[in-house]
Length: 66
Image 1 (cartoon, rainbow, N blue to C red):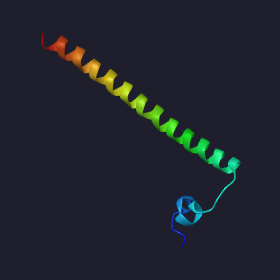
Image 2 (cartoon, rainbow, N blue to C red):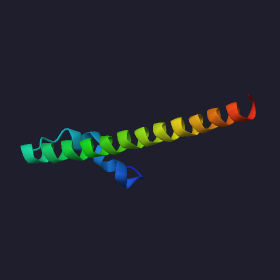
Image 3 (cartoon, rainbow, N blue to C red):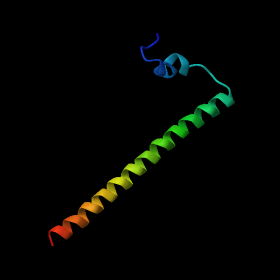
């Protein structure tokens, strides 16, 4: 059964049951690791940006309302 979204075909249960060789599993692992690392870096950037914005507003509030 194919879905309407082609990018989700690689996650179908039929493909997961196929056995792959060591090279295939290693490349699959590295692709997933790369994707997770990108997400983690994005979360760190968002956290730092949020902290800087909060710091700016805290300093500005103390300056405006002593």
